[in-house]
Length: 217
Image (tube, rainbow, N blue to C red; front, top):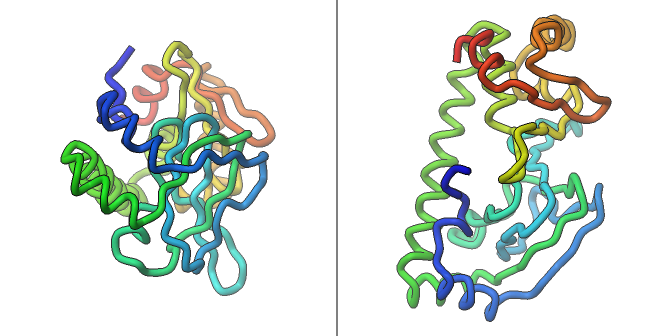
């Protein structure tokens, strides 16, 4: 089992207690919109279970999936910090549970608990780096793009060797910056090698080592 590098995993029991004391518990059904792009809310959500899809929409309504966040991750930290409108829409993929913390409470917690401040900073930095990596990804071979996106968005339970990417093929093609036809060819190559299994609304990574080898990652 690897070290938990999520926001929650970077904190200790004292920090967890302080966060829970300042928070409100929430739950969302699959498909529920947690917040919309452009909203003025400033709360943060820390996910305890389930997965949340992070998307941006164009003026014509076209959706681009940016990320899938899972247990232990904090979402909405940018608006809590700078007070600007929500930069993305959050949608529950599974039944989602977590805690919501107001921006004011988060500021107070950061002042009182340095480890929380450092954890938030590490999250912001890692996501900034991930954005750059996604931009680099769009210039590589299609198979490399698909493999990198699958590994980036995969979520697995601590004792589960099969990682699931909860995206449709249309969403995956959009993130990788390739056509549906090109994606289908890449997925067939990976599926024929036994590296993945495709479902209607998700893709399972069965053999990560084989996936990395085939995609040159």
